[in-house]
Length: 474
Length: 132
Image (cartoon, rainbow over all chains, first blue to last red; front, side, top):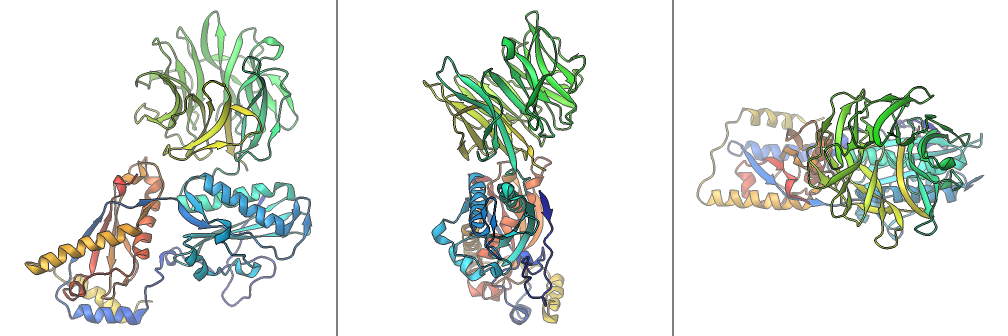
């Protein structure tokens, strides 16, 4: 995918027939109140005030407010000329792009997109000249408009424009050139552009999830690796289910996945190449290896290995080589996850008698326990922002929570019967996990944001567990 | 560009001594006006849906109104309190939300006597900690 920088149009120029070009915006003018009048009013106010006694400042405290999703309008995106593509005609694609943007923003929990009945069709020429009076009347605070255009070389250009309805100004714009098959990626990028500009957070919609797809009776489950977009679209299976696979994890380059497989009835860590569909053993050892994860630079795989009844954490170059042992304590040390800068590792260990979380330097030195709340802690994952560690809390039930890398600020985010296996979104603001239903044993993928309020089920064709959210796509 | 009278106004205001606190009936008018302003702006204040640590940030804006309740110029951020390394990413959102609340709630309806008393210059402090 190629990104286009859509240039501002000069005032005197007509709207281009090819690419809409909105009037230039100013970061200051963005907040210009619509009802502030001109200099005449200001001069009048000045005269009144000059006649008044000495001025002073009135201090007003606003301690409350309304915490609510932002109303946003995302009408179907028009096309300058209807053209057929491998993914449908450009007019139909314009509707579908707007739907994907709408669903992404709605699922974030931070936006409340207007329903279809509140929207008005947008002409191509209006893309850069929104009908602000109409959008103001709908109650929308922000407006996303765009276009879908077929190019001569078989690609599509998707233009994405974000407007502040109150201030009647453009906030940002971005263009994306994609093959017709990748139109959804352009929609995700557009949603990321809007999300980033309005929330100040990093993007996360244009990303994928690898997970374990499950089917069959509780005592004989077929488990296959599967990959999909973060919203559940473009789902496909990576393995055929002949052997059980667990704990898949993306490499930073997103081209490879590491996981534990029971191939040949021996649980060991493998690396799978998505492009070629081939897998290879990471460490050719007779011992059981499991719980793998890539280092942030993609050069190492950290994993657990059970030797003589003792499980420790090791790391090995991704291309193979001798494993380096990082922990030596008696008991089970597992679930290693690197800090985003690669300098530290969080892991779980029962060395104290119960499963707890520990942090150590990447070379295994300076191991310190960080979890001290009641109950047990498992499956720690360091946030890509570095500020939090997600974990599974075990005590009466299974719940997903977060704490700081020093162990403070513990916060439980979910309250299902059995919620476990957290994985971070690329921007570190959303966590995906799997929830097992009481009784049936059926598991589904769910996501929750850091407020713990916005929880939603992630659609999968079969049951799902062990999600691993990949980095943002390039 | 601002007109000359407005610039002169700014100069004059900058040189003014602070007026004494109103007394008697004026004090009551003053208190009611402050409470009314807080109620009006609060109705327009939509706090961003961000983690709790972000809502620890307090934003202070300087806002000036004309006698008709319209803004004189844009709200001016003058202070951010409670910003830490852990929540500084949210400072801009909190500032924009506060500014948007002021803009949405224009014109502010206040007793004209207040303006005639020279009280047109507001310092609005947005502390949304209590918001869920």
